[in-house]
Length: 169
Image (tube, rainbow, N blue to C red; front, top):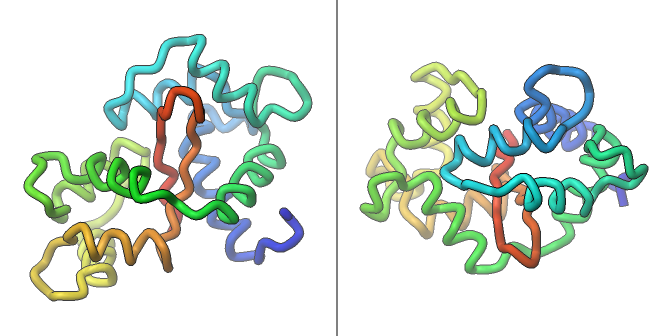
């Protein structure tokens, strides 16, 4: 499965891994996972975080290393995102609930994930997804973006339906 990933996809997943691996030690701990989830408005318990890690922790050391992360992401790429997952992801970005993702909302979520983007980078992301040219991303445009270039991988505990976005550029 992992052997079917392109070099570009592996590089993108390395970037996503770095967003979680806050201290840069090559492992994602339950604490680091919790920090990212809380920045996205989730409030998981320590037990829920540990369950999420255990789901992909192949060597059983209590953390997720890059090869484990890569295996999980390769699996997720083969899964088709459900309508509900896409709607939930849209809600994370659409902070004011008006049905559109503005440049400010996009910047806010990306900043919370540790991605400091320039105004130009945010504008470019909006432009690439903004099919109707109104300067923001509606739900239909978001779905298209999710299923194509900006493939968003979700890490979630199936029983709890806790979801977290890993933006990948």
